[in-house]
Structures are given as C-alpha cells and as structure tokens.
Image (cartoon, rainbow, N blue to C red):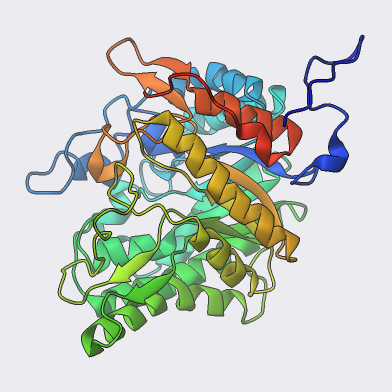
Length: 430
C-alpha cells in the first residue's frame, strides 16, 4: 500500500521520508537512454544514412529528421528531469564530429558542449556513449572495423572528444553493443556492411575488444576521474533442441561471440574500465536450421512488438554473469516495444524486481537506464516499434506526450520503491 502521509510545509511527494523502505539505494542512477542517430535527425555523414536508402537492404524507411532531438534537446531534458530522472544516457555522433577524416567540425563540437551544459542545468548526470552503431562514411568505406589501423582511428576520435569535454563526462560508455556490430553486421548480414562470414565476425570482435581498451586509456588520459565501461547486449543462450548436435554447436558459437569473448577479456586484467554496461531485452533459443540462428518464441509466450519473448528472469542471470568479471554493472538499456502501456508498466515491474532481488544477493548494480526515453527510429524496423516512455506523435509535429508508464517510472525514480509503479489505473493503451 502506498503511504499517504503529507506533512505541512514539506514536499507533496508522498514518498519523502520513507527512505528506510527503499528497494534501491539513494545514489542509484535512474533515467533513460537514447542514441544520436535514432533521435537527432539529419545524420547525413554516417554509414546508416546510406544503408537506409540503399535498395535491397532490410531497412524499411529512412531516419530523416528522427524526432528532431538535435534541436529540441533542451526541452527534452527538461521533460525527463520533470519525470524524476537523475541521469541520461546519450551518444556523441562520430560522423557529425568528424565528417571528413582528420577534420573535426567545430560547430558539432560546440553543439555537444551545449548538450552537456543542458544536462547539467537540468540536474541530469551525463552517461555519454562515444560510439553507438553508426560509423562515418569515410571510415566505413575503407572497411570500418575490418580496416588496417581501425583501433588507432577510433582512439584518435575518442582522444579528441575526451580532451574537449574533460570534466563534463562523469560516465563514459566506450562502445555500444560491440558484439551486435560484429555478429549482426558481419555474420548475419542484417546491418552494414552486410557480410555473412563467421571468421570476419570473430576478427571484428577482437578489434572491438582492443578498441574498448584503447578508448578507456584515452578517457583516463583526459580525465582520470571519469568512469568508463563498455555496453554489452547480453542474453541467456540455450539450444532449441537440447539433444541436437547442430543446435548445441550453434549455441556454443553464439555464446562465444556474444558473451564469452567479452566477459573473459574484461576479467583478464589490465585497465578494462570501471563498470560493465548491461543491455538486456530477451533470452535466445538457438536453432541451427535458421539463417540468423535465433528461434521465434514458443506459441502462447508473451512477446513484444519486436517479436521478442518477455523473460525477466534473464536479466538477473546476465547481471550475475557481467559482474563475474569483478566489475559492477550499470544497466544501460532495458525496455519493451509495445502499444499497450500497461504491458510496459508490467515489464518494468518484473524486470526491476529481478534487479532488486539480484542486488539483495550481493550483485553490485549502479543504476537503471530505460530504453528508451522517447519513441524513436529503431534501425531496420523504422518508426513502428514504440519503445518510449514518452510518446512522439509523428503526425502532429513530433509532439511529446509522457505515457502513464513515464509517470509510474517517475514515482519509482523519486522513491526508490518498486511498488511505486503500481497501481496504474488509467486507460493506458497507446
């Protein structure tokens, strides 16, 4: 039952003064995540700008103006702050900052200075991602992560922005979902450069591991107080048919490429950063007979608009795996694409219950950043999936409207109490 006490002369927040009943600590990071290409708009110098317009790709529509966050960031941050967030994860767009090799755009550098200033003004702790999926066209054209000197090229960019924004990026995510880049781009052919070679995918994994370590060193050199980490999309893997040799072998391959390569490297010593960014959406059952190996959910299973199974138990499993490296976890993405906002609230409640329970067993978790803050461009799927706590009406000038789930999440952010999410009594279908 929610407390109803309100004291005269105090905040009207009914959760104030109930700190002893918190499920999460006072210094927990609460917020949501975005990425530049998915929200800013006008990202014309990236490889994804070309991919979205190239005949025969899986992209269903171009990103275009996205949700125009490039111009509306200040009002967007004000809205998120009003919803109880104390942190926000966003990405710097490498292709904006370095549209031509070796030539950094001063206007773009100043833009992200203003973005960081706006976050500070609204009381949102910046969690800055240096690379989120997109590559500058000039880098992609010479092979991207497969090219000679790729690590050095990336490190030059990281050094430039880390020096420019030193002291203003307390949390730094080096690379977003490097395993997805390796596997989806180089094994499954779903993203640019559209390759289907397991040897190349494994090689790119190695390059991205080296790029992360080099980026950590560059961030340290610019600001020793900044905390750095890599953001990994983690999923529990299991064979669809436990007695099938091909499914078992394919599961072992996916486990190696998507999880073990990274967690083993993070546990192997040296300066690998200060935390592991954990991104979790679903579990994966592996079917060796399918081109992308991932079997669809069983009939009758609760799913999302993306066709993913809702499996909150998996979040606890991957948090334990991530922290086995000796690093604490920061949940940098977890969320659901749905048109039923009641399902979103239920998703939040069940996944955050898993987080609370695993923390109570001693697993160190630093914060929770929901995916996503706003409805946005969801890569090959375009604008159909609804991931946002805040609805964006594309037919009405990109008008922002917080969903009831955003207000439920705000109660949780302010109180640290899981039961603050409930009840939601409004008609919350989007």
